[in-house]
Length: 413
Image (cartoon, rainbow, N blue to C red; front, side, top):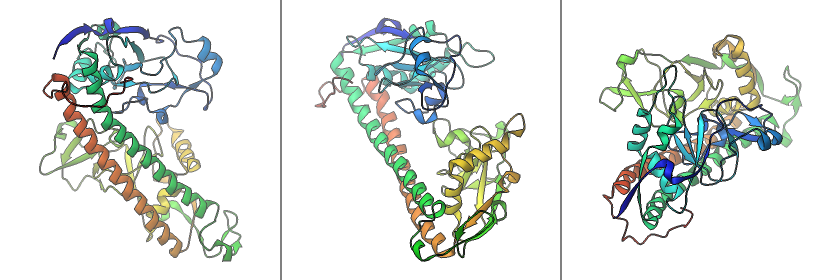
């Protein structure tokens, strides 16, 4: 297989670099400002769900000196813990400023998707991270990136490699979409039954006065921290952490692990450490305060807490309650009194309506089925990512000969 070697800078027709000053922000719903937080784990495309800043149309049109990334541009994080993380633009959407640079490939020489996969290859990622010249925080200079060597087989081989790897990413994306639909379904049923009170048989139930307003007869008002326990995590010293699975050790779960499985940590099984199952309700104490997590099993650190129900058949009901935007916002605001927002048990002194046991049981069964499906799709995605990541170096190194494989190729790859 014939391979030509280029410097990255020789493969580009444009560099989008708007770093140096911060644009004026506007309100949610305007143009998304893509930041390094949206370049998550092994995600191929920017995650717009993680966008927190926006600019108005006038700023979008006039402020950005280098323009904006478009479909098939490559974005690379140049500052922060995510340095070297890379995504490819799927559409003309959003803008970039601090800590990100965009590269527009010359499609006459290199397939944008092939370039993305080469840059996301573990070997390339390790090299990019070695380019760090930061002191206060990790940082890569753009000229250093432009000198990275890129081996380019002929275009048809590039497209075949991209097509093979993209097939895995397409399956991962489909499963991710199903997960989102399932999550929205569970919350929609919660809202219908327990917020709007349109539960099965509601027509036959009388509404009565309570300290929280009108509620169905037979339902009770309780205090959240009286029907749950709040269990903060532990923080064993770094010297006790290992980075490969080993007998006698368990996964040590941090906030980041729920969105990326790139840097797993393990600690010794020890009764001093708080543990959780896949189904437990976990909540962020710091960072995205009040964000509900689930899906990992092991010991969890101090940035997380486990919310354990006291009453029978209330776990999924409590999960739905905490997943409400208004509750999350309350917890986030209540925890922000200190310099660094921190959630604790006192913030759960909220009045909550508790339905009758039959309805709780019905919702528990329904919601647990949804969560089991979500966990199943997450496991499938983990296997797909592992398989893709095993194939990637074999394809890039030529260990797998794709030249003679009959592969349907998308010319946009």
